[in-house]
Amino acid sequence: MIEFERFTHLTFDCYGTIIDWEAGILAAVLPVLECHGVSISQAELLQLYARFEAAQEAGSYKPYKQVLMGVMENLGAELGFTPSEADLLALPDSVGGWPPFPDSVEALQRLQVGFELVILSNVDDDLFAATETMLGVEFDEVITAQQVGSYKPSLQNFDFALDRLQVPRQQVLHVAQSLFHDHAPAKGLGFTTVWVNRPSRCPGVGVAPPTQSSPDLEIPDLRSLVKLAGM
Image 1 (cartoon, rainbow, N blue to C red):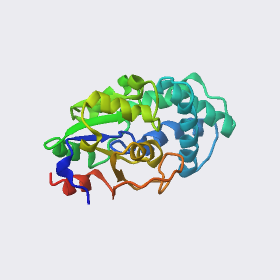
Image 2: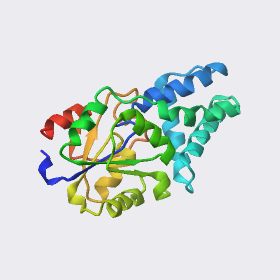
Image 3: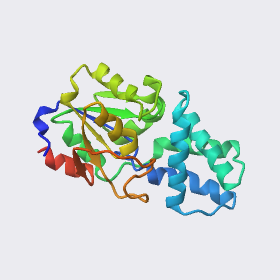
């Protein structure tokens, strides 16, 4: 069991952990596919999204808006259609409206009583700003891929967070859904991690390539984290 009293900071992945990005992605992409006469299951679409997003983020850094446009281009090439300009903007234009999980806002408000709350997310500053407004929670620090110039699972993002927070990693508890983007690199750097293994259309991995990692704690939602932390 994790000793929560030794942590001063909770670092959170956002999309997939706090925000229901599966619902957001599907709401943005499925109408595009329907317009082009493409039929695919939700799980298959999310698996393609995960593969294409990881590939887009693996090269030289580019803004997340461009990553998302690249994902749509890849989907077109894979599924046999040519995206219009509006199609290419469907994902980046939708991010600010992706919904929080039902437990997210209350859980964050309660956790903020006992911890500094930090976002560590693969996103652009302005896209997260729209999300933060919707969450109604003021985070103590927000660290984005745009600020770092790289995307998780790069270790650079976690090192950047430690430099920003100016606390030892032993005081930081990293909370995330993705084994690929978050737990594998964080555990490699000696962080303690909590796996928020939410129900997913892609069980076990979510919207991410498969990988092996051993988080310190597995929970089904953020409400469980509040309870375990005694908040």
